[in-house]
Length: 136
Image: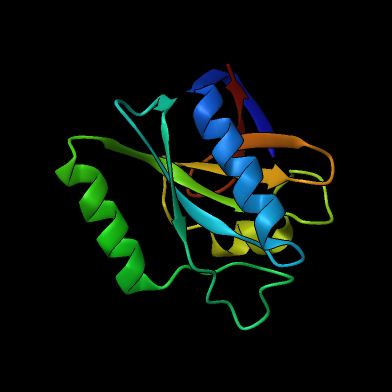
């Protein structure tokens, strides 16, 4: 992981609260969803998705049909898909080797929530690695 030249993303208080609520409600399993907003650098809405992974305590996976429905709904509202989020119920908000192996959405933000530490961090997937994104 490498730090980029000051990538930034704005996260509203309402969206931040929704992320922590979802992460805490889902413990001990990882939760996941989609980040949406008026542009690619602002998150104002959090869309929850079901974690359909075979081992949801260790990783997350979005159902492709549900994911497509959420993405369509975001775009229908005239919003932008900023990226995706998931929780690390017992670990810090740092991408794991599994997160890197399974990342597929080049250029999108992957936000990780750590409910026990009450912290979160965002990263942009370049297609090869995650680059840190500063949260404002």
